[in-house]
Length: 109
Image 1: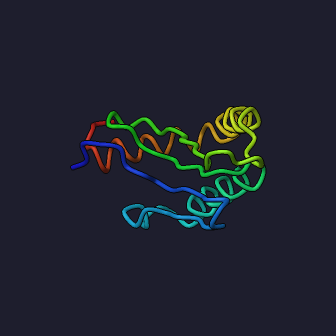
Image 2: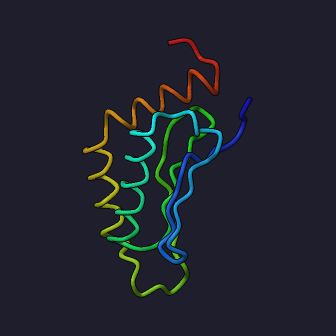
Image 3: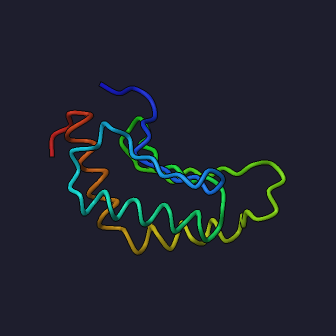
């Protein structure tokens, strides 16, 4: 069904916007809310653009970009914040990976 990267969601500090891929509208509202809070707080703290992306193998990755020369973007803080989020939201992130692998990639549990 999907043979390249698929965006789950993202937040942009420059446009002050949050995006959830409509393919994931069937996720429970509590999960969608948690994703929104996580992404928006991240870009509020360090700036830039955060995108949660599924790789071809179903792994959920954090991708961060920033506008060139952005003095407000904190590159070191960005990496630390991602590691913190991965620790704090480990169960949620693992469940989202499993969800994607089963319902989008058709893998057996």
